[in-house]
Image (cartoon, rainbow, N blue to C red; front, side, top):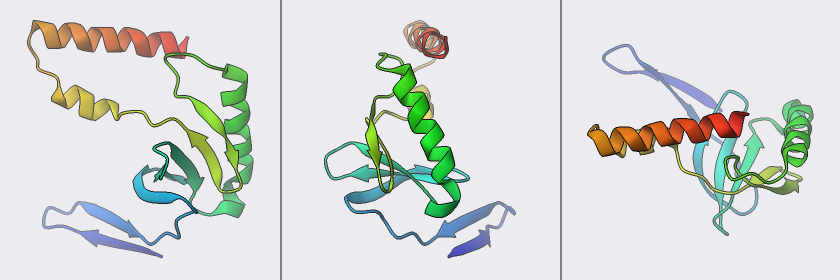
Amino acid sequence: MDQWQSDEEGNRTRTVTVDLPPGVTEILGGGNSSFVGLLDDGTVLKFPHLLAESLEEFEAEAAIYQALGSHPRIIGFLGRSEHGIRLERGSRFLECLDATADDDQGLNLKLRWIRQIAEGLS
């Protein structure tokens, strides 16, 4: 069930009621078609809002992870489940950026991260 609310500045927020798959202890984030939930073993499960509508997309994403294999710049794929795909838990890049100082050392670190992102994309 979705509920939309607006704050005093006109920003809209969406509240969604979700049945969590087995083992998911908390929702870490989400997008247009899926959620990322923390599993009790410390890994994450990416699972669709509506299972029947997203199965093809998840099959394709799992196949891409399998084809890519292991790489230090790509989140680790741990397999599929009947509820979604299991992945290693990473960190949120924007949180890392916000927590990094804007001095020379912090800027060098941010440049190193950008280089690592480019390596992962290549």
